[in-house]
Image (cartoon, rainbow, N blue to C red; front, side, top):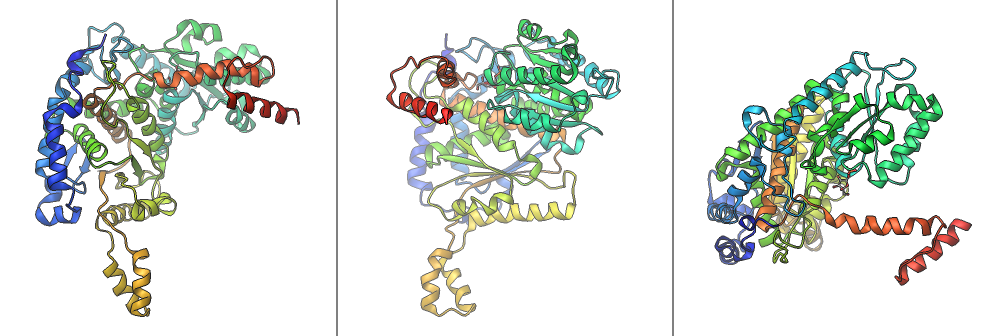
Length: 554
Ligand code: F6P
């Protein structure tokens, strides 16, 4: 089953990995970031690059030209060039599920020749055409709800990759919402989201878009069934065919649910859930921002694909980002990575990137089934700045952990005042400088004495005031948050995650780790509902179930 070409050697057995270990121990461990800047006059120019409309400053990382050379060699030794070619050729790089990973095809043009011989590839353009007809029909008022009202309230029902992409992108692209349109989402199993939403929604103006690759996911199907009941209660059962659309690979299940054949949008199993925003799963987003903007979003991603496919590694942004992350994780010992966007409209970007990284790279065995002998996956977390500056930045600046940061920085406002965005930009740049340069005890003592403290008082307080600095970060800068730049940004991270996976030798495209919990929940649900007994022998579960039963009876 596994393609041995992609998994021949453990990363730690590669000569470049060994050389990087020695290089870190003998040359880099004792270096500070300020030291690296002092040694190289042109560091900013030498450690930054452009791809499409994105600019990456990676100068504030613990690397010099030798580190970079060794990291680039690592990518080659690990087989990244062959892996990139294999992905675009449509080889079955998702080896455990025996299929290609072809999100890149969804944003390609015919002339790009992406995996044209793979069954279903041509459906990409047919589906886009079908989406265009539907989106325009809705916007122009040709497609309406049961009572003849315009459908303006778009509710995406999905979870994981069938939710996070459209939620993230629709919030990011709020500026581009078509007049009168609104985006809502329902994902979680407990039912409160739908309950809260239906309190304020007008059923006659609501279109539910059920997104589920499988159309069997418990959370999505229970929310979809509850939404169907609500529509039936408000408008009658006949309204289902006008108030529900769906994106899925499972035609039969869409049929059983009662989805109008004209309102069904298909895709293929070679689209992974967390990579599916480019497929029919993007329908809710397209309905809100319009098809022209959705096409620009796809075009942005395509631009990054072309860069990733063609640029030499030293100028290849996704590859460099992956190599820096590997360096921070596997050599410098970082346990997590913070993603900090400086535009509040990117508030769900960290959550989206969390799934992308952690579902793709949270693996402990390699493609060939052997245990990975290196730490895989990054723990991704984050929030928009400057909000986050007032919550967890304390730990970033003065805590004991190394947390590399990606700052995401649009320079122009995505729809509010430029003066305020200027403030956000200033905060972002200041934070990356503060993380790197820090603030010494000596500086603190001088300032404290100047402010009137005695020298002894100043010396006692200075250790608390000092920032050690020397904390690495990348800054990804671009002019404005647009469908194109967002597409580039998301594709950048998709490819970064892919390169990391190739170097670790894991399959980035399966997610078996989510199955066990789902199975157990299935077997426990009747016990929780009081309709059956728990069949297992876990003492803690038995105890919890007994207590749950008592609490339910109160
Ligand atoms: O939680 C695992 C997962 O399979 C994700 O990878 C996926 O995005 C999500 O569930 C939803 O799956 P589906 O689109 O089939 O409902």
